[in-house]
Length: 583
Image 1 (cartoon, rainbow, N blue to C red):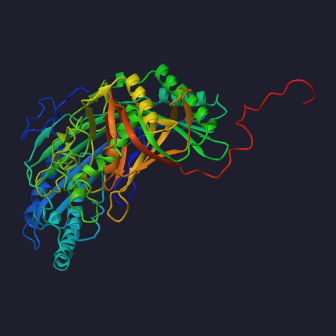
Image 2: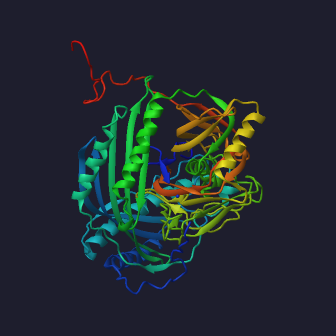
């Protein structure tokens, strides 16, 4: 999670979650990229362009003038099927279209989005439902009304900003342009659609959740299948015209249990894919279920870990979330110019912030890693800028930030990371955060090194963190620059060779600058965590990938716990069977 509020890796139906998994695929990006000869230009683009030209001609002559106008229509077709404890909860299919209008008044250097002092940024342009019919006249009426409303709001905001600038001290970062000048792009790609027969999935979610009923430790189980085809149509006054689509499928497994002391125990797993042929088969799903069940049953009976500081080994997926929370959010460009932010890395470009064997990129052109689809892939960001590979850290040295069109001093252009959930204002966000290491070890060598560190520090044990639900971080200046990562599966590893002990109730805590310097070695195999990250611009799909990391010193605290006791009776059909004597 980020900013003054919590933002983090968020599952689509539960909490903060990212999940498992390199193939390089470049998205269309060059200026004036040739349209796909197979693609047909939607009549929506012509309607949007006609209304844009009419509106821009009039609004650019107003006082204050509109210097930028952008229209985006998002057409979404979605299928959802969910079940619980052996029964169907929901089965639905819907389609909708939403219009977003962006009007900027003033100039690229100073416009109605400018943040003065602690004034909060705009909540974002409201989305307006428009018909799914391709009727240009009806669409243009909706665009006309929304443009008028958005211009009036921008006009009023700019007046307040100019007044505020006269009485507020402006920082050097705040003097950067409010909106970067970017080259227009044209890309007409094929529209996408899905055809899903819900009946087989209804049977699957019943069967998958029924299997969980075999365990008395599982209080509740939910399995959700979702399929989504989304097409975007965008035109801007700068000359950009885009038409592109993306398909995603997801299967989520979630189970809940309760320890004797009332602590909630959750286990979660998800499969993500974009091609129907990659749909996980029943064997893969039941294998994942067996692992989740075994871990939950172990955690329910496991002892609580006391707060401690010492060596820790994070597996690849856990390390991926660690980097997302501890580093990734602080490398988002808009946080470097906001006076209310902690600006942890603002003045550290060119300085070493990580061990020299670590490098980090954010590559939203990557479709896959190790054969697994990456959720952070896209062709264009939500400001019409092509996806790009950005080197953030090179051998430990900070080089760049994830940039939207909110420019920074020294970083005048976007690198394709302006992202948002529908209806929110785009800001710089992570996409595919990839950690690479030049100092790798095998898993056996990492474990031996962990035990070596435990002994050297005079500890009796260290921690092996195998899976993480997600986490959050505070980046606002008014709070401690701290992070919290929430492990799900943690083992004590003993220096004397005893068998590893599963423990529960562990939260990783710390401060970023200190934590990042404590990494001493990494594994040799990257793992991916796919999920949804929530921050100021809403929930967006992301991926993070990292090899396992060994940390010389990591602080953990006790997890927040419920005081509600487990149910008095076991689940139905799990009563103890009495034998011999009277009943």
